[in-house]
Image (tube, rainbow, N blue to C red; front, side, top):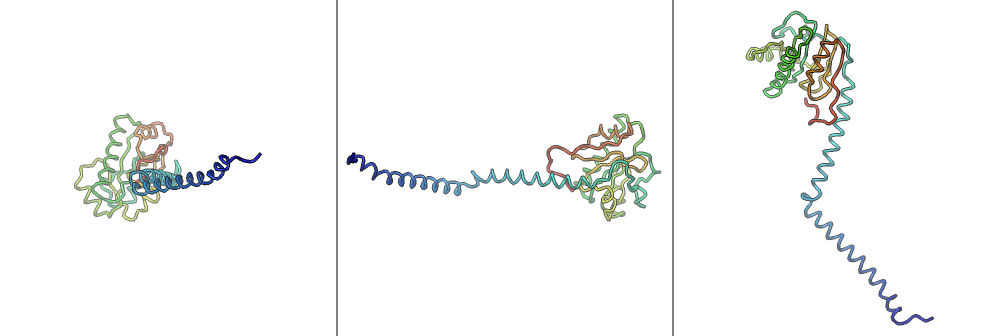
Length: 226
């Protein structure tokens, strides 16, 4: 059967229709790319920012996990922060139980935060009825003279010691501040693993005689800070 003229016309027009569709799709794609490019900060930038934030958070979590693996084990004997500082403010006899707060460099913002942590923990220990007397110590990475001058201007009920060379911070692995440690007779009883300090855990560690440590937070709050 010979093809009719109408069928022949359809066969001839089909390639042109396909080419027209392809050109239409190409044009639409070009317009879409142009619009995305022209409005990148409104369209693509938020997605990229979220992806970058997610990647950064995962990287921080991995870094935190690596650094936490360097923590001294519970039960380890650590340097006595009072005996390590000849210029300890408010130095007393070595107590059987001690809360050590590493506050980092001496500065208006960071030192105040660390001082608040040490003060709040001391108050909570009394309020929550710890079974033994616990002494607080704030460790600052500054010269003995600077720490002595700072302590002289404050009304503190705990000792403040200098760690000018950072040797105490390295021994305790205080890689963020403020970071809290609980010691009994010089041995590590409790160590802060999460951003927020759980006062109940600290009291339990001193009251029950069981070495425990706070667990890392599921989500990083801005991360560990120095």
